[in-house]
Length: 271
View 1 (cartoon, helix red, strand yellow):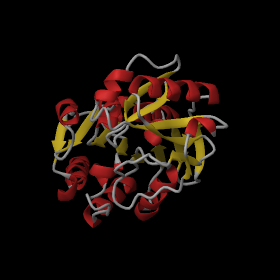
View 2 (cartoon, rainbow, N blue to C red):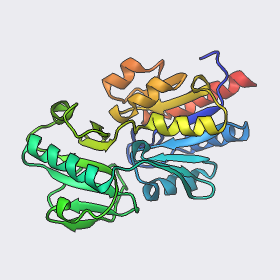
View 3 (spheres, helix red, strand yellow):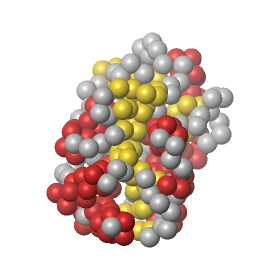
């Protein structure tokens, strides 16, 4: 275990904190409560919007912050107050999405709007985790109805499976925007610099916590920046190979209470 004192804990949700069926293990819940009781700052860092993160925060009952939409929004969970929001302007968003469509050909788009709404094209399909239901306005052409800032674009592109679409778009989007893996097997377009790590850095700065004092748990490609940034990075055994290669330690799988096993050891070493 890392010799550096840990003061903040950051958890990805799907594939990490939650079981594969979307449920929360009682053992994991207990371990997080014990960490909270020992004054750790508890953060949920997820690709989900806050509306889909809040049920997990409520179930835990001890979450301090939510880093949502892969860093585009940071929430004070106790007061349900937005403390940071990083969105593309309407013009940036439209330009970036049009560029993606031109480069990739047949794509379907879904937008997470800065006002909290969601706009999906009818043809947009995505393999969301169990229990994750998003109420979205369905349209034929998202580019024709976007009327404000956009937090994220999800790009569904069946002609370019896996990460090939990310490779095609990398470095070719308009200035101020960038592409990265979303965690859902689709590219995601965001304001340049937005990631789970950027959200965690804002929280840690507010608490005068150094990145070396943060332990982060993740499993997916959208966790890589967070795992690089944190002083002690934990990848789940069920995670993507890039996460496993990057992490300082590999925990048992999400369905084997991997988060709890690491936390129990951390707490035992502190006592």
